[in-house]
Image (cartoon, rainbow, N blue to C red; front, top):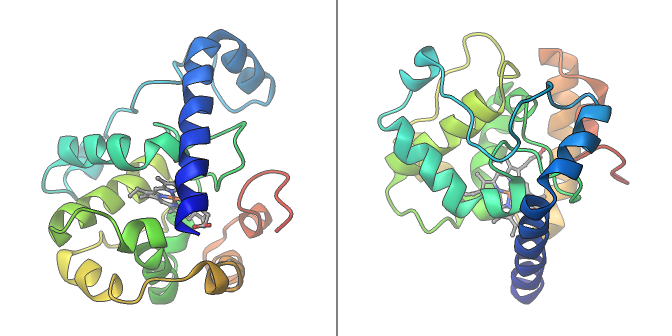
Length: 193
Ligand code: HEC
C-alpha cells in the first residue's frame, strides 16, 4: 500500500509538472467546464479572507504547509482535475457538518499520519483546507479545528479498507443535515463511488 501511494505520488507530481507546462490548455479546459472564472490563474494559492485568517494562528504557514504536503496531489487550489482525486475546492467544508464527519477529516491517513507533530500547526493546516479551499461549503457557525481535537482524532487513523464506506455514510449525513449537494457522494466528478 505504502509503495502504491509513493508511486502514485510520483505519477501525480509528474502530472502536476505537465499541467504547469500546459497551463494554457488546462485553463481552457477548466473554463469550458465552468470551474474557473476567465483570467483566474490556476497555479497560485488563493487569497485568505480576513475573517478566515482570524480562525488561524499562522495563516501563511498553514498555506505553505498545504502547498508542501498536500498540493502535489490535491492541487494548490484544492482541485486536481484532470487527476482522479477527491475535489476539496468549494466542497470539503461540508464535512464540518457533524462531530463524526469533522473527525473523518482528521482521521484521513494523509492527515493523521502527517509529518507535522505540532497539533496546533496541523489544526491550522486543516482550517486552511476547510475554510479557504472549501470556500463557503462549511456550515454557518462551524467552529475551527483545535489542537486538542487534532491530537485526539489523529490517534484513530482510517485504513484504506474502512475509508470508503465511512466516507459514503458521512457524505449522506451532510446531504441530509447540512444541505450538501448530492454530488458529495462522489469523490470527484465521474468517480465510480
Ligand atoms: C499521495 C497523494 C495525496 C497526498 C500527498 C494527500 N492526499 Fe488527501 N487524498 C488522497 C486520496 C487518494 C484521497 C482519497 C481517500 C484515500 O484513498 O485516502 C484523499 C482524500 C482527502 C480528503 C477527503 C476528501 C473527501 O471528499 O472525502 C481530504 C480532506 C484530504 N485528502 C486532505 C489532504 C491533506 C490536508 C493533505 C496534506 C496533509 C493530503 N490530503 C495529502 C491523496 C493525497
